[in-house]
Image 1: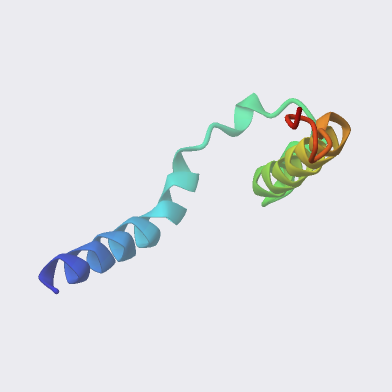
Image 2: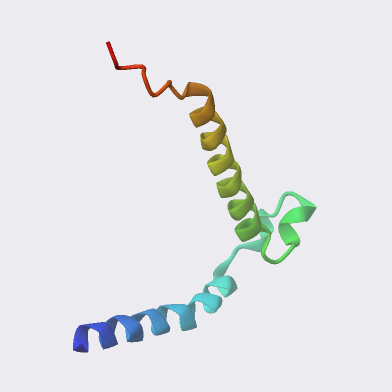
Length: 72
């Protein structure tokens, strides 16, 4: 039970200090105007992840074999 409490406490500490990492971001590296939008990179990552999942599903349907493929 104590381990669970320590894990929850550790996650709380990590989550509480994460917004302060934004202070160390170098804004001079911004090259496109869309980079200024807060939350652009998490949204871009989420959409990319969904795109990869859909791509894998489509490839799965294309490469699928019949159920009797290995039967003699």
